[in-house]
Image (cartoon, rainbow, N blue to C red; front, side):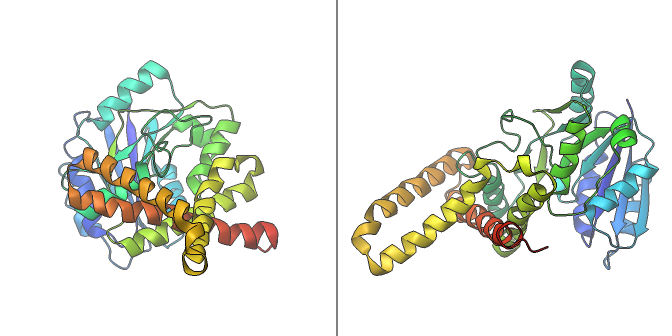
Length: 322
């Protein structure tokens, strides 16, 4: 099995250097790497070409059109039997391709996704953000930490599709706002088999500041409504939870200002909830600092997603604006 690894890149030369260094030590050598520079002003051509003696690698520069279409650009030029997509802010374990190859031979998947985690070299904030995105107390632990209930939708930071999927389904139709989920749904609808490969883990840096993290998650909340506009049946009750949590926080703030006695039970509930997050993160990360930051990242994960969801729910569903 020959893999084509496709990496869209936008103004992140340091990240691609770190990612390529992890690909250069893969135990399974049958792969090529295509780096698609999507209109960056900070170009990484010299960095990518510096790996020419370590990897079967090609660099392309194109006008900016977004990450989904950059991946399509790579699909069109890939030689592999299987296309693997990574985000540039990932680090790949040395046996990743070996694990994927063995699993695909045993399970015959047409497309797959894998989990993400925090690497030991990550900063405390990056570890806390990773916790906020993967914890059972925030996202329900469904982002690769356990088998997905219902249809599994791979996420594009760690995703693979067979050449047959590309030839029959095509690539990404939208470039952002939930493009990976939209693509996964079309793959499902075309009758292809998609699954989670639990061992195909990547170390995902995500964002390096809480402000960047807030903006990213707010965008994810909006993306869920965009998916609904394409596939109405894909809006489930669970997707409303962050919005309900966010509205609840607003209500608690109002009660604390105007009716403190009525806010007592809500305050106790929130205290218990955040203490559970603190101690759960402490057990996983063995760091008081990461545990404390995990409370903040978890709060941002829920409220940023909730606000983005509410914003586009009102705008695009209630008010029916484009």
